[in-house]
Length: 374
Image 1 (cartoon, rainbow, N blue to C red):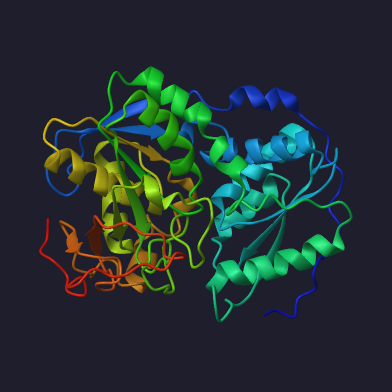
Image 2: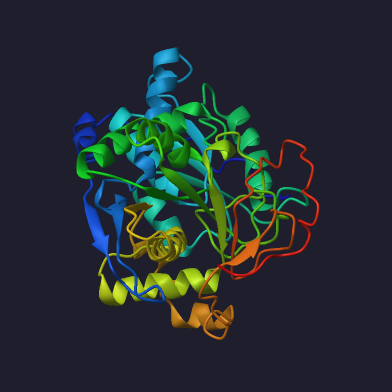
């Protein structure tokens, strides 16, 4: 793992600022018609970048408030969590609003700009310097997190991957979508911890029972049964199996690669002005595809955050060139997989057979051979 000390310093006490709570939610919907990469009828995007702390401030507040109600999080106690960045912003916001110091366990692949931003918001960072042999960076961060927890009296770990309050935090977003849309046929959700998809689908299907739900994962992610591989994309995907992922709610899953996500992000920025990072590019690509193939369907998705965190990656020509993203052939439609284990997804792949990889299942006969493209 790492030989760095568990903590450079104990976190300082924090004063609560409850006035911040009024800044959460009520984010607008944008109609997106950017060619991604082909013309399409358009889809709706919930712009969480225009809410304080981005999308995950909803989950962060829900987890901390739930823990306070149950007596698991004492007044003024330190919150310790693993993050690739996005939830860290949300926790920094929630910590300021509720009066809790925040220690975030990240890794050395966390962008320098995100490190600066998190520290500017008052969070203390602890970084691991190498991935674990099993479970990659996430497993390494959790190991370090447990050491940090043991070093801080009364520290609380929200455990975003398995905490049901994560999903519960998106009830407000579901209510906003019900008010903003007259009808919804297809919901497209990026999947990392599984929180916002699990939190949205129940309330939205009670309103629109025939709602189709498409999950969007990263190539190299193990969430839906693909082999875990090193991933360039952050904010979606996982090398572990979060219990918050409600596999049964998805009608299909798409895996999207970094070159395709970058292309979508840059197209959005040039022509729709609203854009974001890896998750935004991936869900935009799949939403545009769904709007094309589902004739007349109302399609909606969530853009989790804005582009600012990604100026040194997604929007940086040198970064993209160094990783071969400017030379990679771009998939313009998904390759159809009969089963998540039929083939390793690269570029862009789709599967309509969704399973929970933590539950043993029999692979259908013939499912080892990829089907045609759709």
